[in-house]
Length: 567
Image (cartoon, rainbow, N blue to C red):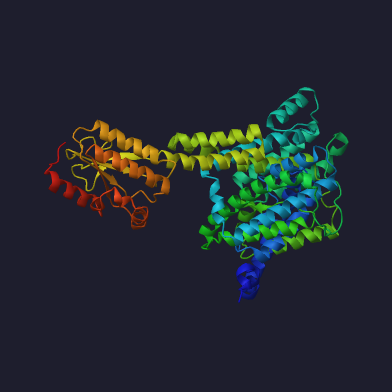
């Protein structure tokens, strides 16, 4: 019998809920709403959609995750890191300045595809896909994304708009707009004021609802000083009522753009969620269920897609607010969804006077939180190769665009793994005085060796990509080491031998035998040794030349040759 509670953790929450948790969940939900509303509206506009769709999306994703999400505390919703990706897909399919209704329909289809991909990945237990973005490339990607968002929002902060595709064109358009005198002083003043409030409170009073305070003060300033008469655009009245059910629709000609965008969005959403879930689980003592998280995020995206929503992800900042406010369960998210619904039904004009530059300030503040320059500095100090990967991912986003940038980041992560397998660390080992075992002679130059014997360690599985590197190194030893009789391969790091490597090993052993050199293996793992037997390599490699330890191999060599250790 299928355990429904396993796939719908919300049922378990209801059946095990303690009424003593309710006051905290209610308070946390109300506090969270003050952040969900302005951020939802701002991130919707970042995605190229009407502000109201951000609220519709927030309602449905919170409710769906409360049912299908495994985490007690994670908060989902419109996300600053996904906004530019969604906008890229919409522009790629519809072009700039598309009809809002068409954009909403296409964004819903995009959310549906993302949701289905994530649910299928969760059911297939593909949580490891989150590892396709290594930390260095993720840092570079996020820094590039932060810069892209910042440049994209600066015109709105200054009170004008720019028609440009990509970071370079948007930067040029912004600079030209400022130079041509398009800046609206009142818009810039209220936008900078809102940004300063958010950043200052985040810095010195992190528990204060900085976004809410900035929104309220900006509305009061607009009304008090009549800023609309000075050219400041506002959000305007929101549609009254809850979102209607609409089936996502699209043209088949858009399928390629949608599928590519959905893959990138799903990967970023998955990576964000797994990393955020891990961080908060460590604080609360919960266990991360990666596959169920994918199902939960997927369900949230699917639910939003049928109610004029767009793709969503986990928000670290909103999750932190919920936790700091005392949230105990996903009831917090349900309270937030209900509060937004009540706002739309009974007070849709409440945010009518919210200045557009303030929404830009909210997005810019989020972009600043995405950037992680200390991590870049740390990579520079620790490992220059991974710093280079981060820079390449950064440039991929900044120059090529958001979606190509995620492809560059994933490609670099995979290539970095391949690089380590193709050219792994290799060492000749010797016996160092005062240190047990056998160690790299480049680290211990005075290490002793046995004449006629060379101990070699190759720190990777032997596969098609690197076996020729292994072969060439062994050939070099056979050619350059005087009086060489045995080459002992310290095989513990060799976790696999594929068929290509087996063929090369067979040819190499025959070649060495003709030169009077024996290829010997020590500390080979049993599964790898089983493969050697299955490949019938012992037809050429002497079965007696497989030893359980390096010490056993050395003892056998000394019995055969009488060699003594020398420096």
